[in-house]
Amino acid sequence: MTGNRTLAGNSDFKNWVSRLKQDIRSAQFKAAIKVNTELLRLYWRMGADFCEKQKTASWGDGWLKELSRELMFEFPDMKGFSHRNLKYIKQWYHFYNERIKIGQQAVAQLGEANVQQVVAKINEDVFFSVPWGHHLYIISQCKDVDRAVFYLKKTVENGWSRA
Image 1 (cartoon, one colour):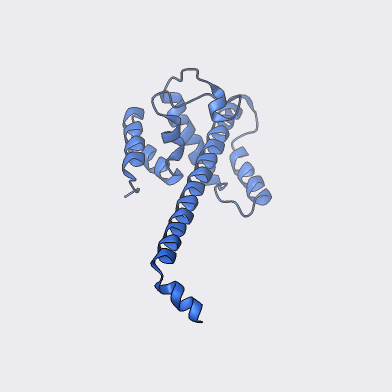
Image 2 (cartoon, one colour):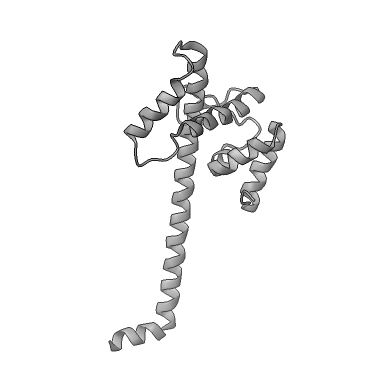
């Protein structure tokens, strides 16, 4: 018991614990950003696949609902595969892909050889670091890609919330 009291009053110990807590929070934040980035990259590839399949497949209109059911069954603990969110993924991809005539860029940056770089006007790190909910809000409010890009950049620069 005496050892605990001396540690609680020891400024060197308190400073060390404070730095350790900051390191833990920083690691948690970095991990959350990495998860978000990978999720958005997945959504981008899915959006590209959705648009391509819609052009070439003859599955009818119900394929997105069926895909949603399949993915939610296979990945019950993972969010993001509702029919509504799959529609948002398609809309998000379409918003940027169709409105920015994409220049060819090193596809390896996106991690998949069959995915084109959408963000000709945006730094990829900015595009993929903005949370999904922010992306949806921005494309719902902006009809122009340049304006959306402005808000993406400002979100990252200023740490803006959706509000």
